[in-house]
Length: 419
Image: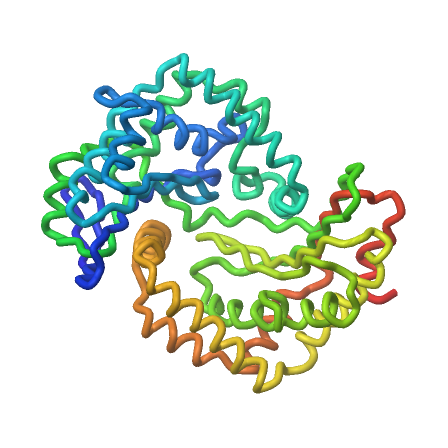
């Protein structure tokens, strides 16, 4: 990897892979849900949409056709801690990709008519999301865990916050967060680093007047609570949450191994025990949600409400087993291979390699070498996993969120404890 920091503060990273004929490039901006006030909910995501609505020199149609005409791809997405705009093109069309992305981010129109039209589109997106309970439940869990912090808020915002967006508030938010210090450009493929730097120096003129994001001390307090949301649907959607780890935590790789053993795959304990052996749920898994300053660990199940008590008792037994008994040599070996395999196979994608560079530099200020990561994974021991399980799976810090037919649910915390 080559890295250059321009005088403006913009960081540019690239990785040259000579045997491919394409380049994937991403513009990573330290702007997401976590920088929004309560009144600004959804602004980062709304802003992402508005960049595609036209610039001083290109219409919305011109933007998408510019890359389509050369067989390229153009897209973007908003996350809790960043927004990413990316393109994949044949290597000869990298100058065009840089030009289009730079034009979008530095010369947006933010036309009033486009803004009002986009409000309706976002409101439809919110409605679509609310009709997907297996996705919505995860936002509800985050809100239950961090009810007074931006990381607990939905990326899309609320109907009220979207309705209140104006061209003025949008431009203010843009000027504050879209400055050179808050942006990383990462590219991977058949790319020449010096050429990329020259292209960005010519095309990407970001303001130096914004507010550089610093969040090292911004650790949201964890809340233990039970959130019950009644919905007239067939299946109950259930999430259990525990305090997790931030990206900076020294045990983050142990968390990857523990999650893999506990619930992140078809060979995991809860998948085998709850789905394959007991048939209590079709969908059952665990995951770790990590951010720069905090994180949480979650277990999700979609099931018939009548099976909730049995499922909770079974999950409770598995949690205790992880805390009280070291995992087996076979389990930890399998988990190491699965985590390492996913890491190495991901390296075969220029998009994944680009994302690893961009996200690492933007959030942590560095990109760890794959060899170093593999070494950290290999060092995780049985004792490390058990110690982390005792740290994370504290039942007095349990947060439960249930969505669906909840009228006849048992006492969820008591069921988890087997009482």
